Image (cartoon, rainbow, N blue to C red; front, side, top):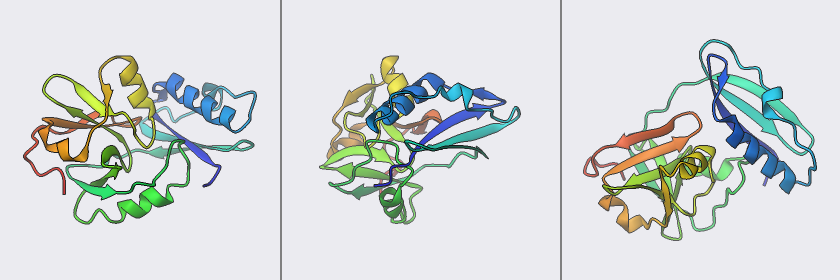
Length: 196
């Protein structure tokens, strides 16, 4: 697996969103690589002052590259279930080869939902949460513990739970979570054919 990592940070009109959570993951990753000091992301970033951008921080133990990309939200209304019991993505690697290979199998669906050992993990671009009528639950074992997921757990707006693939249709709503879309409800009705 490549030792190059990625942070994706939302920037709108020059404002950087939830930087503390990105800094925490950036630091944790670099410490895992053996670094003893870590730069402050805010000192490295200078986003455009107008518009919505995806700030891309590509880094390794000895390199760092920042770029800014205009952001257009991907519309997601259907998910193809993809089964893979060996996939690993615990750190936000820049190398997404296996995830991209799975995404190429989505057929007519908008995105994929990866199932590992009969449990729901993530889509290709986001963590996921499910509403049971009272609370929102996110998989206890995601492929990647995203920054938006971490923040919403800290705020007690979502809760961790093992979500078995055969229980998906009992949930009333589904939402995607990532740094760019925050908490985006994609299905208000479990009968709309979200899964394929």
